Length: 328
Ligand SMILES: Nc1ncnc2c1ncn2[C@@H]1O[C@H](COP(=O)(O)OP(=O)(O)OP(=O)(O)O)[C@@H](O)[C@H]1O
Ligand SMILES: [Mg+2]
Image 1 (cartoon, rainbow, N blue to C red):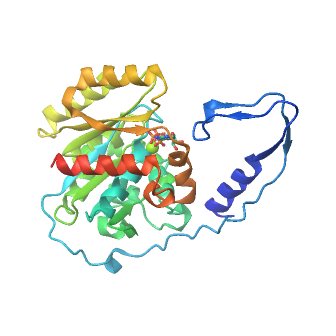
Image 2 (cartoon, rainbow, N blue to C red):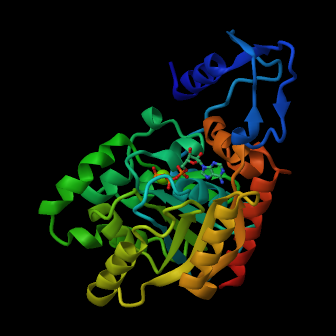
C-alpha cells in the first residue's frame, strides 16, 4: 500500500458521524478545531467516503535532463535556509508553500529537503520509495547534485528529496573531511540556474543544520505564535554567529516569519509584539494564519495554492512571496 493510500485510509477511519440528542451542536467556525463545542452527542464511528474523493495522482519523477526550459534570465541565486531547531514551528509548511508561490509567480525555485523526516518531499507528492537517490547521496556518496534533482514538481519548482537514509548522515558526516562544507559545494554548482534555493532544515543544530548554515546566504526563521515562541532563538543566533565568524562571513537573517497566528487570541497578538520588538524590521509584515487547510494540504501532495487556492492560507503565502521578492 502506497503512502497516499495509507494516508487516505487514516483520514477515512478517523472520521466520525454524530447523532444529535436534544441540544444542537454548536460549531462557531469550522476552520478552527478548538472552537468546536459538542455537548451530549452520541458518537458513532463509521467509515465515510466522500463522493468527490479522488485518487491522488503520484507525481511523475523525471530526470533533470527532461526539465522544461527556463524562460527567463536568472540573476543572482539566493540560497536561503528555512531554519529553527525547534520542532513543528512551520519550517516545512513554509518551505513547500513559499517555494510553490514563488514558482507560480514565474521564479525558478529549488527546494532542498535536508530533514530525514522528508516532510517537504512527501508534502509535494514525492513518494520516497520511488526515489533512487536523495540529498544523502550528494552529501556522502559523491553523487552529482543534478542526478538527484526532481524537476518541475510544480510550476517553476524543482526538488531535491530526502529519504530516511539521511538519518544516518548526521553520524556519518562526523568522520568526513570538510564535513561542514558538503552542501555548500554541491549547491554552489547550481548558482545561476535558480532564482531561489530554499533548504528545509531538520529540528536540531547538528551537522546537517551546520551544513545549511554554511551553504546559505541568508536565513528565514519561522516562529510559531505560541507561549514559548522565542525559546531557543538565542541558541540559534549563537550558532549563526559562530558559523559567520568561522565559515560563512556574509551569513545573515533574511526574515523572521510568524506562523500559526490566531487573531482571536491575546497570546498570538502578544507573541507578534514580542517578536517584533526583539527582531525589529526583519520580521515579515505577513502573518501566516493557523488554518486547517494548511495542515491538510500535505496529505494530498499539493501546495496550498493548488489545494485551496482561494483560502487565507494560500493568500498569506502569496503575500509572503511578494515580500520576499521585494526584499531583493
Ligand atoms: N499555518 C498553519 N496552520 C495550521 N497548521 C499548520 C500551519 N503551519 C504548520 N501547520 C501544521 O503544524 C505541524 C508542524 O508544521 P511543519 O511540519 O511545517 O513544522 P516544522 O517546523 O517543519 O516541523 P519539524 O521541526 O518537525 O520539521 C504540521 O502538522 C503542519 O501541518
Ligand atoms: Mg519540517
